[in-house]
Length: 413
Image (cartoon, rainbow, N blue to C red; front, top):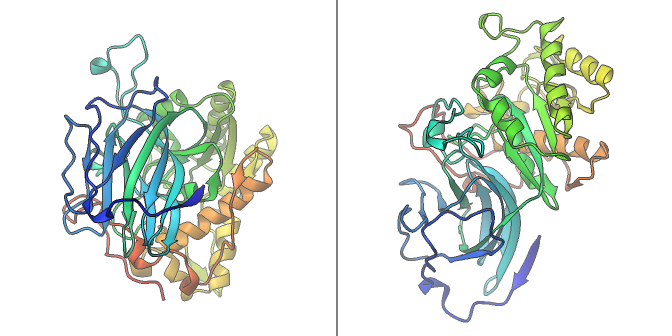
């Protein structure tokens, strides 16, 4: 929800922090907390105050973090004049570029899911409780840190104020691999991190996907347990695997398309339904391998297993294999490289443009499934030159020294 405001009665250039209590926002209170951000003095995050900036040195974003207990939060961001794009946590797109005329401000409202890696229950000592197995740069990231982070990017990065209020809303929980997960390093992106931009109303996207995951490893790393522990009756759980489950060179986690893969999908569906939630199965997004002008289906058998399992169990299905294949073929073998990471050299992982387009296609399918969602799905296949997010809007949230860093982003042409 976006609305215009009158210009502040004081100069925006001299706004200062409004300090709040040092403890994390408690889910038990409904009192909103307000933060006025300074455009001149950007103090680093202070754990004793529970607030501060976490932007990386030399980065192209303004990122402000607030101590927050696990849960969901309605955030109202006040944006000043110019062009600004808003992200949450590890680069989840919550609002596309907001362009505000000179002398005006605008309020933008969205909902953010916050979690940590602790698996504690009310009866457990949190210091002794099991923890989700974090890998790569996750321990240094923003998804598991007991903070709510909002990031502003774009030419103006005009983030002026935040109001944060704990809420309990319906959740869309995502389980999957790197083509679904929140990607925070360089130009790699996934459709899962773009999905919040297309979902409106009192619904939040909680992305539990992680690069390199299979259904087996999702269980053994306790990610599936963590997701289920945060699933309530009426929630939606979207499940997309296949990219890594199909790798025979990973014998410990390999699942055959003609048997075990479908059985694992069925087990996941049963557990979601056991909690009164709605499962949605998704076929793996296609890789970009062209043969004679057509995409070769590297997931052959696995996409069929998803469709067969969904039909047998009466589960909604989104055929991203087919949708992404059509998207690439429409662009063609050469121009489709503009939708992929590492300057198009990667054939599996998307950049911002490709991830946005795939998320839009997925959102459009969600809209047809009669799940009671408010979906904004515009033209899902804009020409690369018409893509709403430019290179300057794409924030870098990892330093080059951190793991999994890829090539720097370049403008889409």
